[in-house]
Image 1 (cartoon, rainbow, N blue to C red):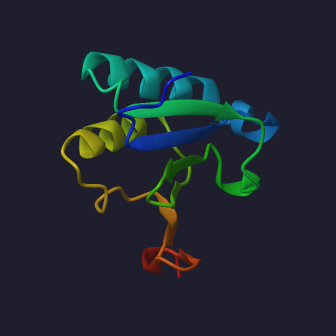
Image 2 (cartoon, rainbow, N blue to C red):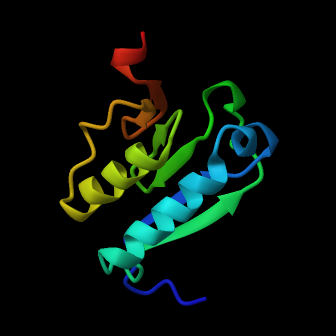
Length: 111
């Protein structure tokens, strides 16, 4: 696989608990929106088995930003991809963690 030109990577949890909570729909929505918005060459996706945050699933992790999004669904997935196209991701209400350049921090709205 050639990743030349890819600027973002989405890790979409498809572990057992996330699957029970709709991860397959999230995966299909994310990939469908990337195709619809012609972002497939810029944003790569990977289905993972477990991202370790089962109680908050489905989880989507955005790299290199280091943002973790919880309780994803079709609507939140569409919004995330639209925000990535517009190069903004600060307004998605389901952010669980973010990376401050050194470590992961729990999103302030979650505290």
